[in-house]
Length: 140
View 1 (tube, helix red, strand yellow):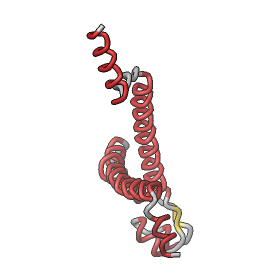
View 2 (tube, one colour):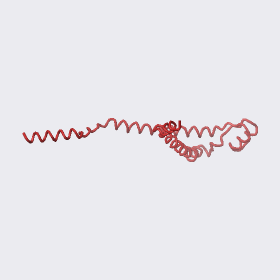
View 3 (cartoon, helix red, strand yellow):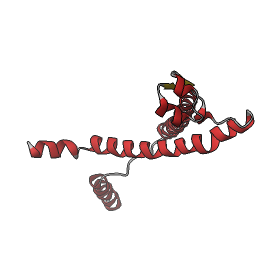
View 4 (cartoon, rainbow, N blue to C red):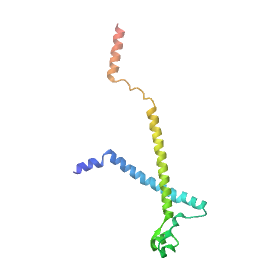
């Protein structure tokens, strides 16, 4: 059973998938920082200094009077549509970048498939037969 698991866990596809997930998580953190630290503050500045992280609707008396989203969450039920907006922009950026990456990969693979393949070099037997043929021609 242990050998079977080892064979499964070390199979190429599983390792490739694990690497993809790890890179995806790291890429997600980069995009998350891009959205939260660069894009959303710029959008907030354009629209008059808005801070999207503190856009919320309090569903209780205490949460509706809170000054920040974190305080509202602690006070009671809260709808944080500013955070939802930020996460949505985050998703759209990730989807767009992945679209561009896949498009580039498809273009490169299409170019490789369209390029004519060079004929393979002759085998050792063909080289020897050609030498024998040339020697026979030289004698006769």
